[in-house]
Length: 332
Image 1: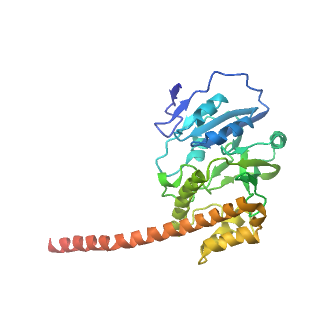
Image 2: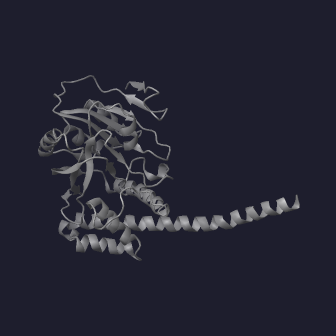
Image 3: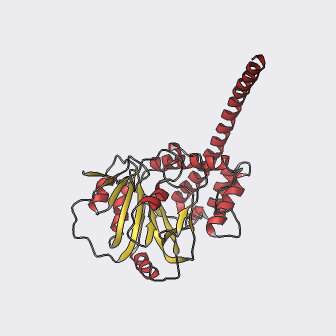
């Protein structure tokens, strides 16, 4: 595999590299003039379906985090440019970094996860939407598939700003103190649009075929990040404020905040999603999905408690050190 060192003026990470695609095959003509950004880390089981659905897209960048499976080979097979992203903590994370640093050729950007794919109907609707000169971004809903089952309940379906004009959308930053344990990609940060937005009727298909072990591992990293967000919540940094009467994303954020502050919230959260939001109608996959959502809630609260007792243990040591310094100054 040939690697090209990225020009110094393009990349904020000195170790970033561009992996060239395979020799060009008979790629289809560009029918969807967008720059697509797909973040990956060991997504070989999901990536092929995603890239197949992008046939006809203007250009595709796969932003990889040193995958050890065949993700890079699959990306190159489909003619995508592969960028190695080396995360060392802080901000920006993977997708915002890509938006800031990649030399995108098209006016419109499509953010897509490796376990998401376009349907022909959505592809067609997007082509029409790009012609509207008065709109700067489009929210696209997700059709969630989990353990082979289409989840129609438990609030599993939501909208996100996935398609927007380059320069008209950026991710909010909700926590400044972030490290490698908190995932190198944005978790529940939302893209904030600076122009007019609309919703598309058709939806993305979110179909993750990885194992539950991988799912739990990823959400463990997500809970590390969310615990840090709550630790920093004394100074609200989120640009998208929790609001029961706001957008869907604001309502979801308000609901999460409300549940989090209630004792026993993990159990109540499962009850809300599984019973009140009819998750039981999605069978066993619905039960497992709702249960894991509650478990993540529990993990966040447990990690906050762990951080609290760690700080309490550190405080007496710091106090003794300060006292010793004062005594030393008095004697001298």
